Image (cartoon, rainbow, N blue to C red; front, side, top):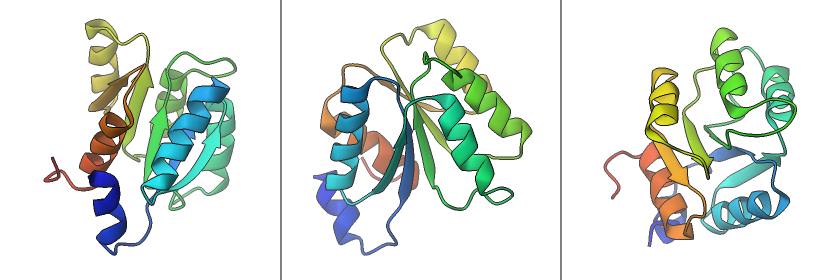
Length: 139
């Protein structure tokens, strides 16, 4: 299983910023990722994510990946992605949403997002996607 692979690879622990407004989904994402050996910080909207990321500007080195929902209060995932790009933050982004259609995927692809996860999701789908972001050869 990929969760075991992450821990056994002996790499420095990757840190993921989870941006999700639904409490239960945010906890589930964090639990699954942490059980696979990732370090996770979770926030409940794009505004909290922006504040956390821009605090560490200019390098944004604290995180290796952003996993974000799209439709959230205070600041949407799209607004967050656009703002971070303007600030020079080009961290990889995985979008997780219950409302992904071809049009939205196209808009997100133009913003540099290449991976999408539909809600509801199975833990192995999440872990496979994240592992592939760090090592594209992992299937």
